[in-house]
Image 1 (tube, rainbow, N blue to C red):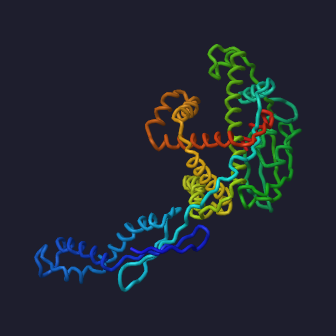
Image 2 (tube, rainbow, N blue to C red):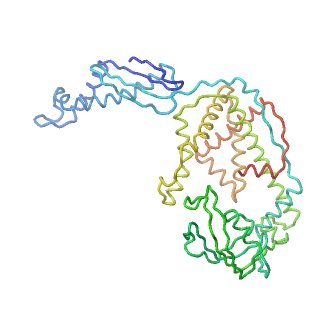
Image 3 (cartoon, rainbow, N blue to C red):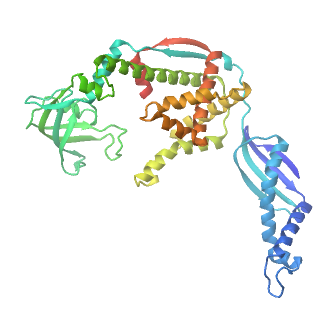
Amino acid sequence: MQVSVEKTSELSRKMTVSVPEEVVQEKMAARLKSLAREVKVDGFRPGKVPQHVVKKMFGDRVRGEVAGDLIQSTYFEALQDQNLRPAGHPHIHPLDEAEGFKYTAEFEVYPEISLEGVNQIEVKRPVATVAEADVDDMIEKLKAQRKTWNKVERASQEHDRITISFSGTADGENFTNGKVENYPVEIGAKQMIPGFEDNLIGLEAGANKTFEVSFPEQYGNEKLSGKAAQFEVEVSAVEEPVLPEIDEAFVKAYGIEDGSAESFREDVRNNMERELEQALRGKLKNAVMDALYEKIQITVPNTLVDQEVESMMKPYIETAKRQKMKLDDLKLPRDAFEEQARRRVALGLILGEIIQKNDIKIDADKVRSAIENMARSYERPEDVVKWYYADESRLDDVRQMVLEDQTVEWLVAQAKVSDEPMKFDDVMNQQQR
């Protein structure tokens, strides 16, 4: 076997593999001999067909099969011989040769990664605490989730719920399929298009109003995107919110057995502190990744970027299939995912190099702790833990997550870190974006 490699770009390679004719003939002879014992040919007893007859009848087919086998057997041997690490599957092109067998394999290789300067990255570490005022705000939000509504005989105002019937037109065409009847709108909840809810303030039951607002430029329905629309509204009821008292029944509804306001407040604080800790870790990890991506510049294989784009698009495609939408109607442009995909691939390769060069090993105790933390929010945590440990693929997902977190910890230990004080709300609101 002869192997030659041509560098066609920074990461692209064209490898040519040649196999001598005697090797081809040897493999063909073995296959034809086996075939002669199996084929049925008129005029010959089973198993007694001469090999030259078998070769004449099946030679081309057998040579094609041998060629396929040779590609399978020689491709990886040739890669090892040339010390090449392909990224993704190759494009194989058999070549017409009078003697022997020859083919080319085109593929991309993994980049060489220099970790110079990886211990000099600068990172801002967000720090925050849960203040009493933060707990107060959270309790108010929990109360709001269990609010009831009381009908009032007055003009509507911010935070009221107003029940309306309405119709809408754009360019003279009705787009609400006639009239929408008895539709409740909480003013200020931003469930309607911008400007719509503002026009509902100051209306009493029985009132009518006509107004115009424009749909956002990025609205989901292209026919209405950016267009001015006229709405006719009839009000049938106005209700004000009634917040519950923090009594024993309210507290027990959140699983606090003793029903006391003090225990409820402590439980709320504990949950907030857990969420804050997780959010701070996430922000620190993002800061490390940003610094790493900026510091270590590499060229990534397009093959891997393509695979990552497909992976990122997959949830949208599956949702479309469930909703029985045509994939063409999704209009998912590749360039909407490509930059993020390229970043993910680059960081994955860089982290892999850091793990290998610094011999970072998965900590089994941290894997167990991560699973227990995820299981904590379920009714039967022990069942969730068993579920993860019952399947290696599920367990591997957690192991990879933990290994990545361990690598981030290693990088933080090497980096120049400065603390960045933040408020609880700022940390959590950024986390949700």
